[in-house]
Amino acid sequence: MATIRIRIAQLIQVIAGLGCEAVIGLFRLITAIRLKFPGWGWAVFDGAITLGLGILLWAQWPVSALWFLGLAVGVSLILRGWSYIMFALAIHSLTSAVPIEIRRAA
Image (cartoon, rainbow, N blue to C red; front, side, top):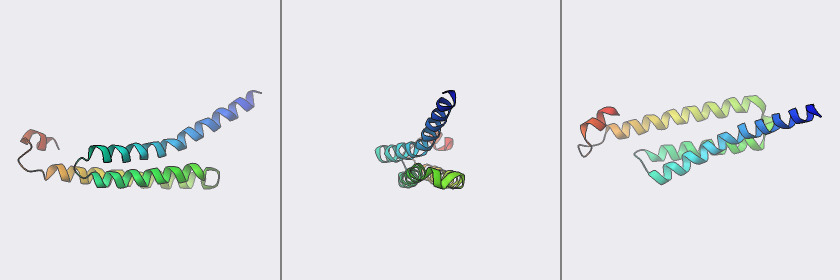
């Protein structure tokens, strides 16, 4: 009986971990569309790809195993870094309408 409980707990932990990637992508997608900050298109692209990878990972978990998990996390990190770079460049190129203290912080 204890081994069944352990297996159920492990299964719930795996499902929650896999769903996390999809939830992160969905949150990023909705936030970027809602806020429309400078360079928000890259964040939408990042969120859509992360959401898609999370759904694929969740749907194909027993088959895809660890290699797809590494690929999904790697692609997500690359896209997240790229969207941060584009966001920083967009803030850096703002005109004098923004106070200089805010531009220096970026």
